[in-house]
Image (cartoon, rainbow, N blue to C red; front, side, top):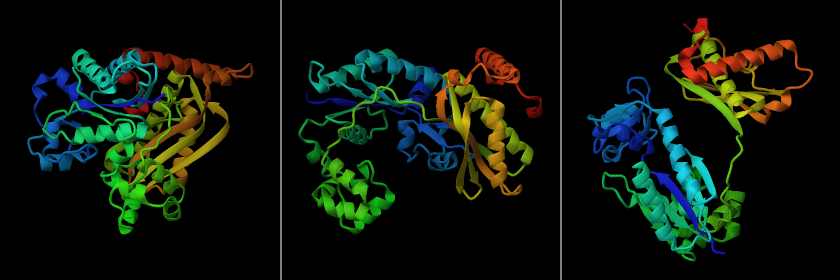
Length: 389
């Protein structure tokens, strides 16, 4: 059976949600993100703002330089999450084969559904437009690779200062021809260094990659050369993965000003550890590996980790391990831009609870569960450590 894969992307999702709550933002150049004076970054920007050159992941200070009248809106994470769930409900109502990629992006396997793929895409887009008042774009093809690229191309063709709400369909059998004229950076797996080397070889388009001998690409780029040769011809056999197991849970903070104060850094480590621990418990997970991430003032980033025999989701255990790792890499003076904590190597949390669990462990677990319940009901800021005040 011929596969039919949809790639759905919600257009400027954060901005679209903000416009629902504040219609005055419609048609205005605005960005969701942090303050331009405190190292804020653009998380999302409206299409009118993009006409000035504003882009996601850009420093907010640069965005304001490009667009002096830019309106800056703070994140509304709870609202984005709630709206994303409503979108995913519609997708699962459309097909049981949904692979969620992020809060605003997913693959759908529509193989075997009656009707033309374009008509099915129009119907899904119309439902999201009308029921949720959200713009969305879709790429349709016989595989995930081409569907994703088709979506990117469909949106790129509509530079009107408005959400593209585009649909781009690549008919089966035309994948290689569709990809051929596109620049090599549009192909998944071609990063800046690979692109530079390909340009030196005279390779400019995806069609140029497909025209190369497979052996030459393997000799020049290793195993990825074999993969790129397949992808350049529009070949991708990856299935739509219905559910992805969680591989890690992490939390990090970027400081407004580079920090070398020991107390503040320890306080931040503890806050990130507690955040990670609470999310682990909520997901019913325990981990064996604790990892820290540190970014110095010169933007150099390092990670360190420790792995234990017994898994846990205990806040204190996560913090003590993270602190020990941190003290091995920090000289006490070097300034830090970002610090984070993560846990991986998961097991189901219920497995760690045994007949041999100590009374102290049981008491700690009871206290943590009580604190989690309070924060769940009254918000993260309802309880604070005295040392944080």
